Length: 408
Figure (tube, rainbow, N blue to C red):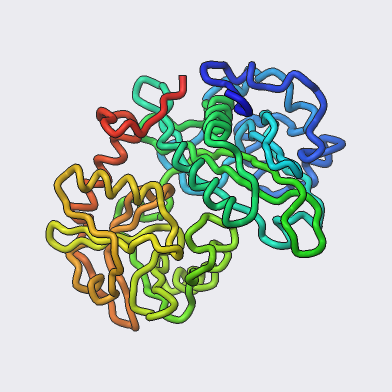
């Protein structure tokens, strides 16, 4: 498999590079142990370093064998995982220069990276990211959910952002390598998941507006629980009618980093008022639903489930795509089309989908000061779709869709 990490079936010990030369890009905590501690002096990080006995992260230690401590199960409260970063053991790094092809990647100790102040990602926002999860089955084995879909979406986004991208095989094998090296951080079955964050960034130095001369593909992971504090309980949305997430012809349909910074102002204001998140309307007519800050939206009326069509301003969510297929297999009629805000206000149920949230029922939507509520709890359709998809992801039911990938 040319250009891939070629790691299937190997133990993390054997995934490490043979050379002891640190990557010039990843001078993770360069010169000394004290340098690392100066960079990470927050009480939060020291709490985890002490509690989890994390090793000192020096780039030259990237090739050291896995220690006894790293083979132990982390001392985490698995029943109360939130959705925030927990430092793990390894990250994966792969680079591309002017030619555009990515070289073979390698595992490095998880830690800081070094970038030029004139890096393309810092100056011109030339960056993409993905999000997917690994789940532990009841027998202890690990499943990935549709990693090839994330690889394809990253390649589509890279084309829009004028960036090279790893091949699908390179992407999937890199994900497998990273999860295998951090397998002790995958929560027990039913306690959460290992969130996997691939990044693609213009890491080369550039001053004038132009594509970066070098690109870095990086993957890190973190164990997570529920994205919303409500968990599977209904969330409360407010519709934003002045600020917009995306415009026709823009980058709303790809997972570029700038799309997410643009929603922070409205999201922060909404949360300060007690809402869970913001639902955006189209910027032309200001009456058609687009998506929540980081989730797709679905509207249920009778046996029909409607969701905004993918037309360049809405991210083609992988969970969205999966839920559509699951719903159709269960006998629901699913429509992908323009969905007016009035339909939302008259719906039987409303729910969101995304990698982080999976399926999140909506308890209420507030529009122009008027609040519309949907029942007293989780809707029947939301609950059914959530149950089927999560059980499939965790290996609790037969995967007739061939969506899961087993990590031996």
